[in-house]
Length: 267
Image (cartoon, rainbow, N blue to C red; front, top):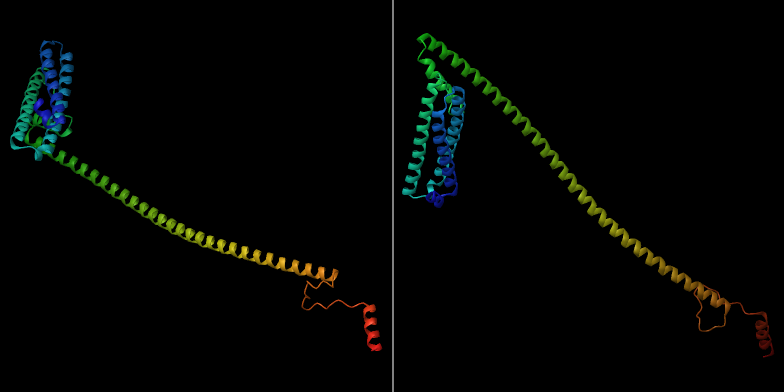
């Protein structure tokens, strides 16, 4: 255990589980020999068979882990791991043989060791073939071939259905991709339009500000002109205010005109 821990914690953990199962199998078969009732023996044997199935699965996991680590280990380590795996397989096979011996005593009742249908079906064929004639073997072979053909046809249908589903999925993905492309193009157009509209709004804002400044200046000029006109009309003799071009000078009074004419006559 310590040696495996230095190589891989996973290998050490798997070995620990396998050793626990081996101890349980040893105790279980010892207990099985003491059971007299056939039903209880059958149930006990089924439980032991389940443990052997689990042990076989763990050995396969151990083998896969060893293969994964094979490149990073030296030759001695790989040899040690291989020998340990073979030792586990040998011990498991001893329990399998012991199980078969106990099963034969239970009216040749078979308890499958592995879940795979191919292995159990193969054992059944071996048992049946020994009691068959040549014609029965041929008929059974033809029946098996027919069942195989039917299984192949079912597999072809499943494959075809899978291809159809894949084609429909690909078409749907392409349609969604095209739709996404159109959406992206529309978003780009909207973004461009927003930028252009923002520029136009800024230009309009500047024009409005300029127009307001011009109108304010014109308003000030008009107010100034009106103020000058009012002051000129109110105080026409004010020399500090120049005459406004286009505005006629104020009319002299009649008294001033009469005095000017009289002075000229006297002279």
